[in-house]
Length: 330
Image (cartoon, rainbow, N blue to C red):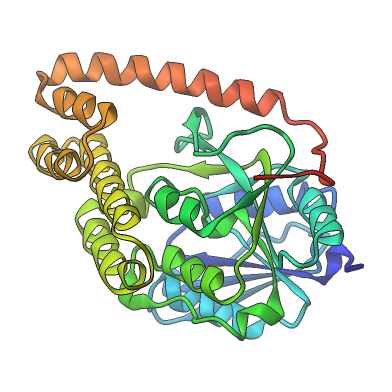
């Protein structure tokens, strides 16, 4: 597959993104392999999105629509793309400058994959490291199985901002489904796996995924409902009970941690108990104990954990180096 970077369309769904959007587009401008087109789908922002007059090395188009949600915004972007490849970038996320170059190289060597992702570092509103996403970070190329995807989905093992995809495949799989918001992206990738089957990950932190108060991640009540709907309707009918139980346990764990981050300790304790009941594990137990602490004690340990996780994220960013794309890890 000999595809040049200008044959990539980047799709950015955006709703009241503020300054984050310009930063996201700047991270595209910083790519060593520049895409040909960027589509910003303004999902009913108020006021409507107007980009700066800054000169770009690629075409940037803002498409305005009434507020219909992130799922429909991405679907509009996909329907407007005409290039062989598409990439997604959330309006508050940032790409490493080498992301597209290395993913294109992986696709040229492994065209059968049709979807190449990467790993992520977590940053806060200001862009400071606060942790790492899931993954081994070995620096090579790793195959992501459906079972690994399902188990790791609540911890965001695969999100749209990570991937470059063959656009032809998108016409053969279900679109982003608003009925599963706010995890419609997970259900979308579920459809990809079932229709196509192969995802490769550049096992390097090439995405800065921003976590902040307005982030959908903090909608823990909506998240757990959507996770349980996905588990019941899409995963359980075609997978063994053990995997489905693991998914439910991790969904309760992650949404419990989200509630804890939002300062909703009673809700966090309830969610974490549900996680423990389905799959007893140390992380759920420690988080539950944490949710029972006095607020000042919890704040102290939260700051301590954030510093430690942030240092790990910084270390992983410093170790980014050219990946070995010829060896596929299992």
